[in-house]
Image (cartoon, rainbow, N blue to C red):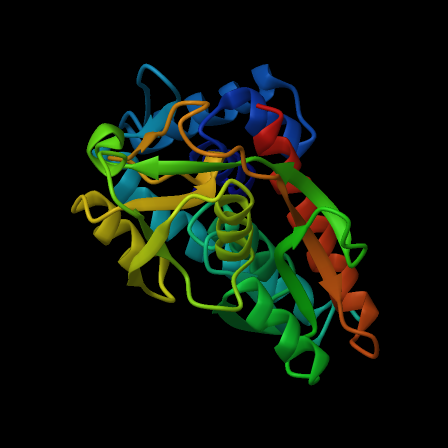
Length: 284
């Protein structure tokens, strides 16, 4: 029989990519987490984790175990919820900005669902402006999205610089109107970029518009033009355009915005999970 505590440490290391961060997240010592992994590897008779140049990664056997470990912990959560009268229940509608959803959100949601199996989560992915409009009309309970500096809405998660990106910066700046790859309105990054270009009287043209970050990334990797993104979310294959070649962009802030009238217990539980996870990752 596999030990659930050891499996919990195994999943935490996989999610965080680090024994140290996994230990902090679980509230354990790093040596304890290491012992859990060692005992788990002894139990299955296989090596489950390996360290590359940047972080701890799963071996092939670790990848094979991962889905089963998650399933076992999910069952544990369901059993605990069955016999806990105070377990959270209900439906929570979460809206997440398009450029955030591909970062560490999956791990946050996985932990939340495991801890609160009786909560039904409805996820909407869209532009920040669209999410705020949907929330105003009562369609979303909690929004995780960007706001501009000076906007007072929501609870700050972190602040992030915006940067200009291109596959080949020299080619993108080689002459003529600046070719832009952008989300459609209402987009915070689009508005900031166009305002900055306007203040500096730089000619521009939109060469590709798409509501999906994967579509914009594909266009930028194809060399179609320049993309604006938060620095930590810059897609691979793109280079940051050097300082002074284009106007400096203002920072954006990622925030959590609850809807008035939403179930505050559910909103608070998910908000705290998101805050703890994101801040631990950024402090790594």
